[in-house]
Every structure is written in structure tokens, then in C-alpha cells.
Image (cartoon, rainbow, N blue to C red; front, side):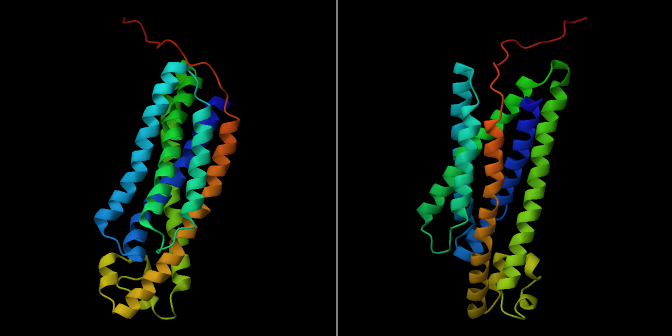
Length: 238
């Protein structure tokens, strides 16, 4: 049933894109940009603020009108554009511009993520409601795990390629364990080289995820627009 299969597939792609991005964005901000952990956390708060705002607004609108299809279509488009713009970010990019891009991504994710659960539950037969709910959640988590792994591997590979010969072996703990503390332990000239290499390696990988949300956008165009159920079924007490 496309009313169940499409939301499940979109949830996988949303999980891949969202968690693959936010898992490494703080490291980029601290290592390449030189911002503090607090400010890096505040940047992610802007993304999550966008999610909360559009989840709330879309939920109220769907409750009032019973129509849901426009929200994931617009949401996946916004998130795809936001991730494409995030791929163009560089350490010299103004902080307000980065915050605006993260807010755009959050607004798009918020219009899509919970609506997909609603659509799947609305399309599932009563007997399969629990299985459908768990399948959407499970696939979203699988997407998140895959996103973290793939994005991390790509960033590490690009970062290693951009380091001068022999420098990777001098990093405390190696390339895969690069941290703000390890970076601070390096001499100033090497510290700047490592930060520049990481700043050049990470953002394009975020942009690589944007086509996946383009696929999610195409899937939402095929999403059936069915009337929402008006009753909640419950077994009669024995």
C-alpha cells in the first residue's frame, strides 16, 4: 500500500539526512570554525527550533482541515534546498547565514517527519496499526544509523586526503579520533592546517545528502491523499 510504503521510505531518508548531518556539524563548527561547544550546541538548537515550530503548525492545520499531503511535499523540498546550501558553507561563512540554513532544514524536517507517521497510521488496517507504527520508527532509526556511518566515513576519507603527507600519523588518536582537545595539543601551524583540511572536507559531504531528500520529495508527490479517519477503534471490554 503506497500510503504505508511511501511514508516508511521517506522516514528512512529523513533519518539518514537529519542524523547524518547533525552528528558531525558540531565537530565542524568546533574544529574548522573554532567556535565553542556552547555555540555549536546553540546552532543545532536553531535547527531543532525549526522542527518544533513546523511540527506544531502542521499538526494544528491537519487537525483543522484533514489535509496533509502539501506538508511533506513542501518540507522535503525545503530540507533538500537547506542541505544543498549547507554543502556550500565554509569556515568564513557568517554565523547568521549558517543559522538561517539550519533553520531552513529544521522547518523542512518538521513539516515531514511526524506527518509521515500520521499518514502511515491512517493508511494501515486496524489489525496492522502497531506493526506499521513500529516499522516507520524502526526504518527511521536504521536510516539514522546508516547516515551517521556513511557521512562519517566520507568526511574521514576526504579529511585524510587533504592532510599533508605524514600529518595524519601525528594526530592524537589518529584521524578517526580527532577532537578539539587533540587539535589544541598540536603546534599552532599544524593546528591551522588540520582545521583548514577539516573545514574543506566536511561541508560538501553534507551537500551530498541533499539528493536523497530530492528522492524523498519525488516520493511525497506520489503520496495518496486519503481522508483522515474520524474515529478511534477500541475493543469492547470483555
